[in-house]
Length: 134
Image (cartoon, rainbow, N blue to C red; front, side, top):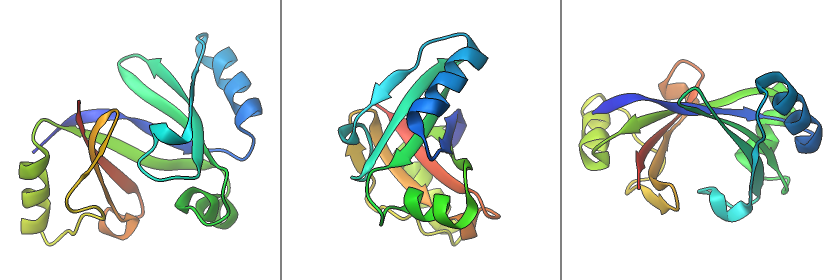
């Protein structure tokens, strides 16, 4: 069962420049995210808590991550939409009933909570993240 939108990840080529742009645009400071803040290695970012949503600028430090491939193939832009659940097991079971296979099953535990992803082919070209916050 999905309960709402947690936030958005925006893939950027130049994290420092994008962070400065969004700090000016939103009027707030971003929080740096280290590789340990992500479910997969090779990523860094900046998080903005804005209006109850997480806006995360994300870039890759490695050439073979999904973010690096996204930037190479599509350029900068919306990388994923993060949706909240209060029960990861029920959410995954419901997805499977619909014929959708999560990319991480079981979900991976991160410092932000349990997380799995849906391939963009499962959601009309948009990668979805399902997050049960810690």
